[in-house]
Length: 193
Image (cartoon, rainbow, N blue to C red; front, side):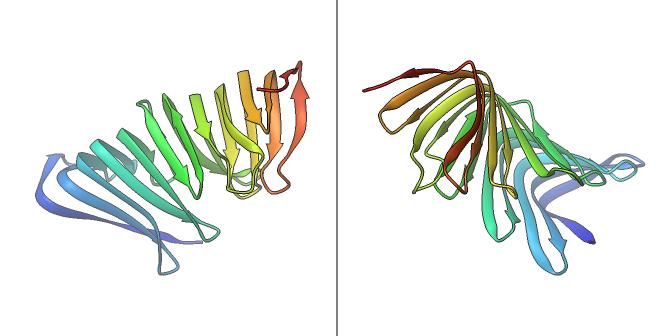
């Protein structure tokens, strides 16, 4: 699978050193087999041509397509590596997909052969996982989303609301496709909310 990429500067571009290009008001676009798969816009940024690190700063907005589904990211800054296909932010991040919205203090996206695409959110809150889901909202110290597998893992002071219940647990694994809990550790359920 080949991915090509282009940075499209709309204003000022300059070289910081022999291997780094700085840009302002730019768009980054990555293509896979001729299809636009990844788009990021930012006020400024830079790319190191040697190690393929990209840093986007200021009102970063991005979209990527995975298995026909469009995901949106909004953050103050994003860092990525074009070689190992990773993206991260240490700033507050808003992640949207269909009816789901996750707001977190940091986020990292990467891909492994075993797990596929994995998105990790720290100190995260979410609203409605999808329109048909029984889960309304939740939060956890760490949320792991596996979009290709339709799985959500919540760890550390995890809680979510399902129908008229609040479930508080150390860890929970949830199947988005089947809309059911797969695993829960030390759960406390509060009914009739």
